Structure formats: structure tokens, C-alpha cells
Length: 159
Image 1: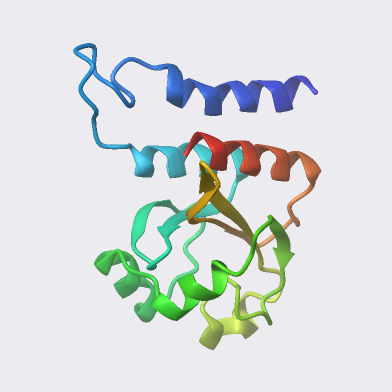
Image 2: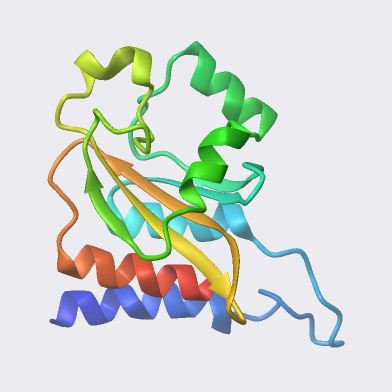
């Protein structure tokens, strides 16, 4: 329980630090999506991707290099396939531990045989009742447990 609480505090700290979202003068600043993805990825020991409804990559962090040339190009272009993003928008609640055989996997489908133990968790991101995007988490092992899902869903509310 203490470990979970400490991890929640790390996530909350992203909101509390000076200059995080609003400057001292009250001016809005750019949201630090890459930093958020990095903190969540570190806490959850997972590759973390934040995308909007069109598939634009807002921020990411990779704990493990699972990428082939096609995926590396997507990261460089900061764009996931629009069809993939649209498919994710059909998910209205957290979908955990999606296997490598699913079209929702974050692992390269052409390399499925290399990532047999890979699991993906999709957390929808909402604000004021409107779907804004998705938090995509991927790792090789172990499966995401209930503590991981609590942290992921809390992280999605912070985002």
C-alpha cells in the first residue's frame, strides 16, 4: 500500500510543481506530455504513448525498444495510424492486458512472434465528458495488475 501511495504522489507531483501548467503570471504553458509519459512509463515499467483522437503522438516514453523501422518512423513523425486511433476511440473504459494477437496491440504486428508475452493496456482520456485521446501502455511481462491499472487511470485524469 505504501508503494502504491508513493507512486500516486509522483503522478500528482506533475500537477503541483511550479510552472507545470500555469506560470506564476497566470499564463497557460504547453502541457508537458512527454514528461508525463516518462513519469508514467517509469512508474509502470512500460512503454507509454499519449495520442489524440486523430493519432497524433503527444508524448511518449519507452522502457523497452520494441520497435521496427515502421514504428520508429511513426515515432519520428509523431503520428500513429489514424485507423488505429479511431479503433481505440471505440473503447470507453480501460481495456487491460490485450494480447499480441489483437489489432489493439501496441507491438508491431509484423513482429508478433518476437513479442509473444507482450501485453497492451488502453486507457481512454476524457475531460468534461468528452473523449480527447488514449493512454497506451505496453510491456513484455508481467501483465498489468490492479495497482498498475489504478495508477494508469489516475495518470489519465492528470493528463
